[in-house]
Length: 276
Image (cartoon, rainbow, N blue to C red; front, side, top):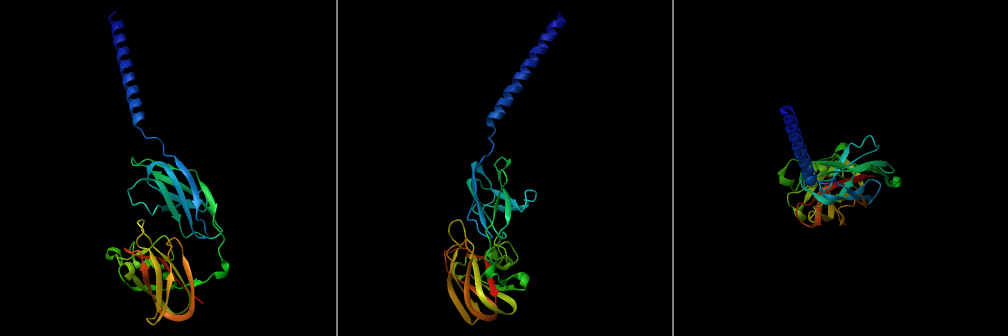
């Protein structure tokens, strides 16, 4: 009799424990966020060296795109330049810069929610457009060609030229980096020393931008060895790389000056000087 009572009590306790666990699991499941869905993932503004990946997420997340030249080597990461670190959004826009013409690119979107859970989209691909091989020229403004920044109006937060926003970014050959002045607006400028006398026949330029519409250099001019001025050249779209043909000029130092801007921390993604 006593044994039967003990077994009944044990069974009752087991049932209570089972119900408690079940109720607890149900409550936790109710509080858990649904998985993030990737919506309308697409490639836009496709060109020979650039593409823009746009997509929405079903709830606010961070935003990255992982990409590479094969499905097994998507080791390069690009971010949404409109989102500051630690912010979350549902609409995302990620430019992929410095691509090669006529090349297959594989990519996937990556999103992390405020709880720290990370989600990935399916892998997609696209092929960049053909480049214009007939206009291939040598950009002698690159640091890799021996050029250097010898002066500038300022660097953001007065940092060094080799810093994240330093002037070296304007001649490093990468559209993924940029030089930002320290609020110089229309008075932004820098001086490039080409390392030797060069015969320049074209000038390339792309401005930086801020999400609030500031920091865009909408026109620019260049001065060769403090003597010969050319421009102004209209550069209204910061998402476009402009190339301007100029009268062949021999020089070693080139000053690049903002003429008109939208104010703020105006600056440059890339300056290019092409030798004939």
